[in-house]
Length: 387
Image (cartoon, rainbow, N blue to C red; front, side, top):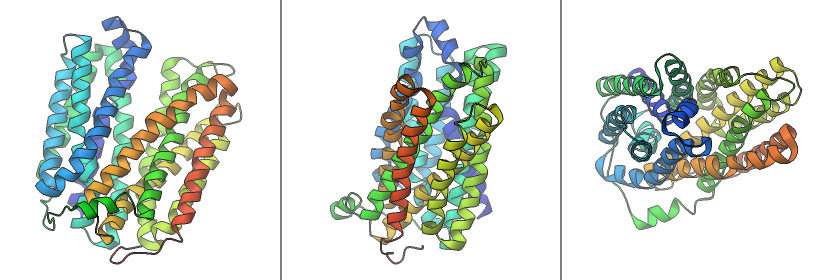
């Protein structure tokens, strides 16, 4: 179990560091290629779009090809494409490579939780899934902080190259440490695929992922505007340091997994929703320490919810005879749709009602998440699903 935990933690770090590698260098990209700030954001948006669409393909594909070959291929190709991004000769070439990178990145998240469900005992699955999600949180932070630091000293090309090297090192580590699939069995049928879109528990879990991510992204999309405006008046670099609260998500997802293995996901998931609401409320006062504490609590609650929901999907899918990777892909598709669609509403909320508007928007999404989490407590358990 320990080798699997470390390998998937490293895989999560690599995937999300590469995914968010351009976010901290958007101003440098804008200046280097002579594009507007809005146009520079396409270097991230296209990657997310490529990832979301490819998830609908890689999940079902892994039901035929197996889990570990797709994981290794995904990590290696994504890091190599990252090196290509660092030497891209023009803006449109860079955008094309970032779109391709989104496609190559899809291999890991599409199958990671399905692999865990198949290869590990039921009593530790939630714990290891939480550790994997913790790795994604750390990777998301590293992708922003490493590139920002390196870019300031050496420029954006070296920044993207640095993250690509991290991705390659993680790919080698995963290749050496991740045990091969031993319990994988090829399965795919039209009836099983339909159940992935009709099972009430799975549909609730997809919606939980979308709403929780929508709330989380809405806050982080707008937090820079609040921190750089009165009464805080922080510079861009200081405002960007808020991503240092991400380790709270690494800790909370791992802890939530341990608690879920002991008390059940149904009992722990609503607690994560309550943490998110508490964190939102703490961001309302115009006191910087309290606001940062609120972001940390919000981040902890979000990764608790996401870690439990994403790990629950393949367990429920398996119990209902649904291909686990296909259900996991649909969950992640909803998750990224929540990021792109629901999260984007924060701009309107900020323009209309400033920070209280953003908090209200996010609170609505979290409340829906909590209602769905409560409803899951009444959904009958399917054997051989755990809790």
